[in-house]
Length: 273
Image 1 (tube, rainbow, N blue to C red):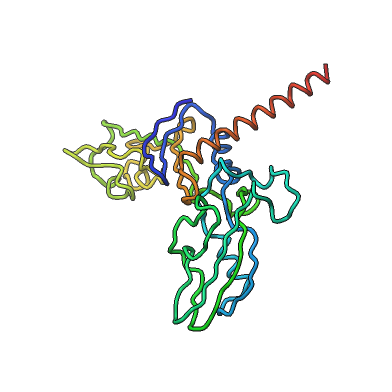
Image 2: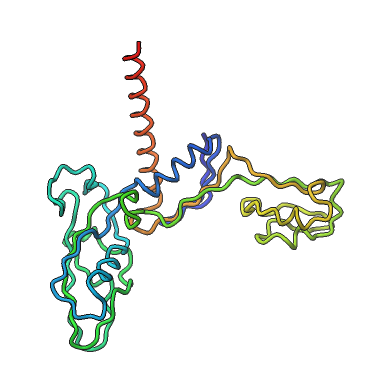
């Protein structure tokens, strides 16, 4: 297996994963979405709400706020040994919101005050509700460490996808340089220069085959295919965790699952023998 990093920052990663099967890549993709834990608001206790939105709508909006997550300080709720439905200090954190409008105003995610400063909204500018003068909103919330397979609000990624590495071949003998394939490509992958068509942005190709359809000579002049042993990954974090941490945690989880499966297979083999 080989990994080539194309782009990497706090929230985005693009890399080429080669020498693997599609099944392996898809397992890694699904783990990023559904099993890497992150913080999200789970319980909401409303003490006063005179806004135009009812309690359930506000609770739903609160639950969908991405929260900065400290994986080293908390335990996922499906692994925590606490017996309380509200969790414990190991798997949850408390926050309060207490706002009274003196004039028309908007309540934002930044108005939530968390007891742990390391756990906070990814953005303070997410609107929750508008209040008119005299209206109040007072509530208490518990954020817990959960997984995307339990609810989408715990998904740490907004995008986790891959595509096959494109392979584009242009026949120098058959291609007459008409340029129709260049015009048809929506991603400007091809370029016509000195009467010859060249590939200039291979990684941008989406395998849409528009260039082949537009070519008067069809596949005799240009062929496009995908290499299923070399995959281009795109991962985008919601901001709750650095994208590099999400990928590393997904690898650890996959490794653990494979190890557990291997142990169970060996145990069955011992029993059968």
